[in-house]
Amino acid sequence: MPGLKIGVVPVTPFQQNCTLISDADSGQTAVVDPGGDAERIMAALTAGGLDAVAIWLTHGHLDHAGGVADLVSLLNARPDHARVEVIGPDARDAFLLGDIENQAAAYGLKGLRNAVADRFLNEGETVAVGPHVFDVLHCPGHTPGHIVFVNAAARFAQVGDVLFRGSVGRTDFPYGDHQALIESIRTKLLPLGDDMRFICGHGPNSTIGAERSGNPFIQQTYR
Image 1 (spheres, rainbow, N blue to C red):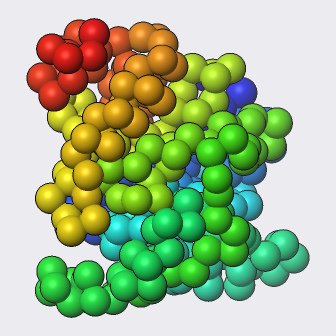
Image 2: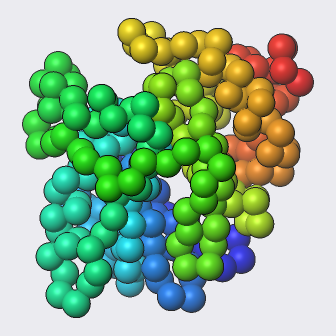
Image 3: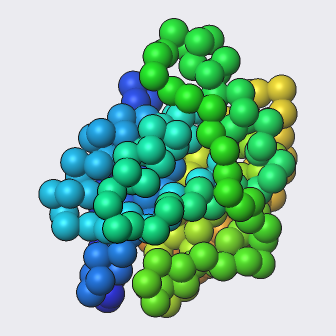
């Protein structure tokens, strides 16, 4: 992708795709969904010569936001660096960010901490790393406040746990809504175009076209 560098650091026992979105010229980087293993993420940033300037969150689940507090501490300890902001998700996921430690205890996981967003995001807003602007789309269903980040110029998106290669996000939570999830895919993601590449929250990346034609959860109804 011209001007953009994309890296993935799998974190937590859930192998969540923490994504490093970087401006190739300056090295400025947004860390998307640091679910845990903050020191591993820092090591990847250092190895790549990357300068993390923000943390973006797609939603509030522990495997996507459980490492935020530790990563913020590490990043803000760097000398001569501006404070790193935690941006996103939609405010409707605030209750999940504040419940990460309880979520972790339910799974028997340690070292994951509640997260605090400096700024929530609404659909129609944008975020940027260097000159690269990403549109924010609200895609509820997996969680009420799930958002995705889309860079139309690079034909690239980070879609969190909305859509996967061959599957879609879980909705078997008390706050989950399968119909809302499918509507999010139908009305927000499929119109992005078949050549739109995406990284999802878990597993391999894909394209909108591949999922439109081959994803059993959507192909029969929403071609």
